[in-house]
Length: 95
Figure 1 (cartoon, helix red, strand yellow):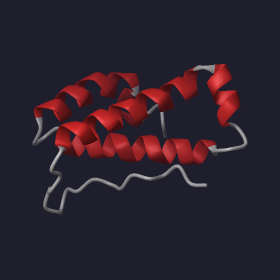
Figure 2: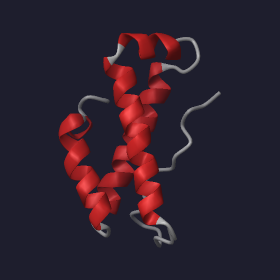
Figure 3: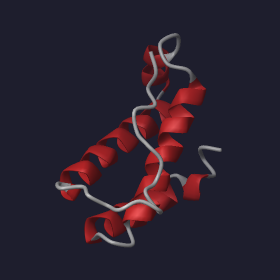
Figure 4: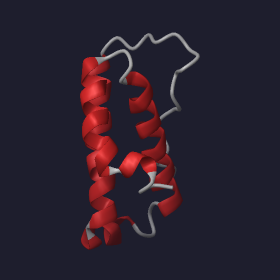
């Protein structure tokens, strides 16, 4: 089972995301869950054995990279980046 279900940023691709608000909100939800897994021992215990820490880190890094890219073209993406950049210390908490 692979948790890495997101793709890297679309910096060089045309952005044809019809429901940007929905994608950003879904990404926010996943980031919140991933952060809670990182800081909560009980949630971490539930994930151990099912999903590797590497997969969690890769998924987090991909979502943050995508949000960093999207913030340039979408106000909700800018807001999300402003909120999550300090939480994840600009990806230093992941790498």
